[in-house]
Image (cartoon, rainbow, N blue to C red; front, side):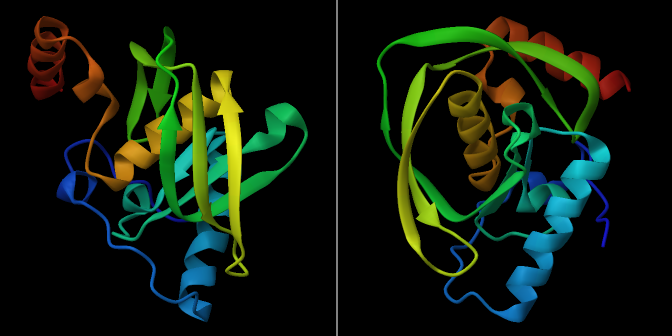
Amino acid sequence: MIMEIKKYKDRVLRKKCQEVKEITPEILKIIDGMSETIKKERGVGLAAPQVGVSKRMIVINLDFMKSGVFEVINPKIIRKSKEEEIGEEGCLSFPNVFLEIKRSKEVEVIGLDRYGRKFEMKAEGILARIFQHEIDHLDGILFFDRLPFIKRLKFKIFAKKK
């Protein structure tokens, strides 16, 4: 089931998401829909609030690594490297907008898979960037919020005109 992607003015994108307490058939249906949607949209990451669901779930399209879609329930960054880098990011909720965002180069993430199994992993480069971007969505943080103040102000003015 392809899900509608909420655009930048939708209030659901600013809500802090609730932890998934139990992996139910409904939760799995949402995860499956998110996985289908990210493939169709050719995105690299998608968080549940982007499809109108305020639950702590993300999917990452690892096709660039030939690994398919990686589903994570209740993801949490437990460590970030002090070393940062600036890289270009886009967002399915902001079509055709690409911004230079500073992020940690490496992160360590914990979460659950669709079967409720806990995992911990280290990610670097583009995968670390995707985790940070999508987990921000779960906290109601949008990528332009990571811009320096003046650039963020300019972006907000630009976005209001659209």
